[in-house]
Length: 114
Length: 115
Image 1 (cartoon, each protein chain N blue to C red):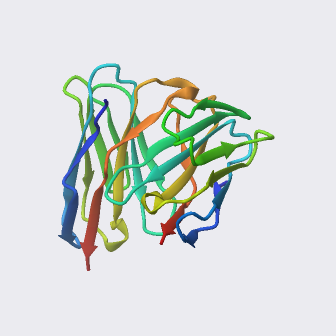
Image 2: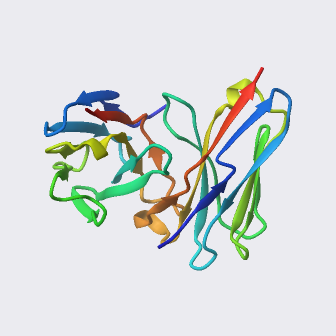
């Protein structure tokens, strides 16, 4: 059984705060780590695909790091805004290629208060 | 921008009734996935298609669930009969299949409530 764990389960911050959350995954047979943002009533949106140990990716105020040896990834949001309120999902792709299945964590639900 | 379409967005049904969900993937995407997300859990794969063929349906409860993608384009997921425990969000995703990292694009989902 492959477990992808995310923490915290939920997070409430004030506008302007910076925040981060964690995704833990089995380090064996690792192929790729995906981060998605899922706003209420919308489709999950891909943020990052990360593959190499030490990878750092950035998209605007959001960035992510990857440690494949110890099996974790951090997602950072700098200066949170109300529009960042969403559930952030991570998923591992252990098979790779076009037939790889994604194993999802339960998500971190972020609420940003104005 | 191309999107994955799903309908209906919301469905309320009584237990023992039949329900069906439809998904239209991004044009040209050969791989199509159906996921189920129960409240408080992460999405879990139910079935994966490569064109019209089922690649993985190991987690599909085959006594009541069925899925088809007859022409290798759009897909239908059916539940008959629905049970209370089937209440969940049903997500459809598609991928090109030619990319290295299996990037999946999701639709907005169908939220099913079984009464």
